[in-house]
Image (cartoon, rainbow, N blue to C red; front, side, top):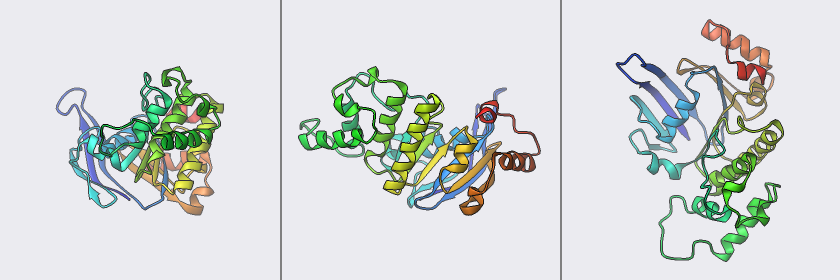
Length: 264
């Protein structure tokens, strides 16, 4: 479903701020893989997602999604391949539009537009049922402006929008990091439910090592722009946080130093 081959990315090349973000990055995801990604600050986790999404052009290498080479494809043309949920709950939704209008935009992603009613009666009924599963009461507030929602409500709505039209690839960039623990757990449980129900292929960057172990069928660890550890199946299920810390020190030759991840 996704193949990243020998991808390189350097920011501010030739300046004092030059930063090698990705170095010979290689990753292959099979259909229905749910991969969690961990690593220290500046490891290249979010950069990898941005490269896949087309936010920045790659310097070298190749990215293939579902058999299509998207290496040189602009971001807007890749949109119909994937859904994405960002760390910031304010991103991914239009604050000045209604809940149902946001869902309608997501429902029409990748489709041609025309001069017809923005939301049909049938669509409104569908949105009602989809919102009801969130358990947040948003189905009774479909005409409310999204800007009035809490961060957790907006993040849950963004997740729903990202998966309304089954994407070939779902990108989750620390999408629970800005939420309080209770809300984060609810959004995370909803994420697992949707990914399993729709049989999605997903990549989830997280700072929580326990979540990385417990969620998905595969875990990768990044350091200095490439993957230093890749584990899946029964071996992944048997991991402890201490095992991940030991693996990081073994593979990188240095001590893990991401305070936020260690505190989690």
